[in-house]
Image (cartoon, rainbow, N blue to C red; front, side):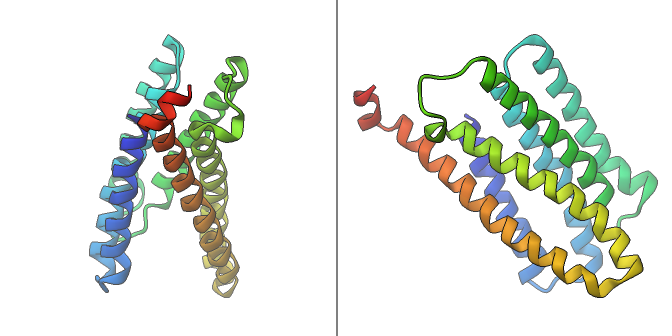
Length: 192
């Protein structure tokens, strides 16, 4: 189920990026699209973690995080920033939620190891991609806002880092989906 949610999330991301970058959409509607996309996409990340994390505490925590993501994604542009600004604050808060969920899942994986090699576990690759990407993304946004104000020419380096990180992120998510599909294939079931 987590893989299916991830595939929907990646499709939604592709559509969002296409509509906001490739189509040449003016800035204001583009920002509104990001404001809609932010709580929707991060809700899906939290949903994935809700499915993967076990125990009452983790289930209650991911339910709480779902509300945090909705409030941060919708509340930040309503009360702190505006609908014509990129939702950096909402994304930063949501990024931290994903990082915390990722750390909780790694702790769970350490406490209850599987018999399968770590590198053959789709959830390991999914979680690794999410932890690295959203941790760096959080700091990138914190630095980006400062750098745009102080020295806008320096943002090129952050943009380049983000580009290469995105390549790693999507390649790792793709590998996770491929591993998961292989584990669920009829041929793989005969091998177990």
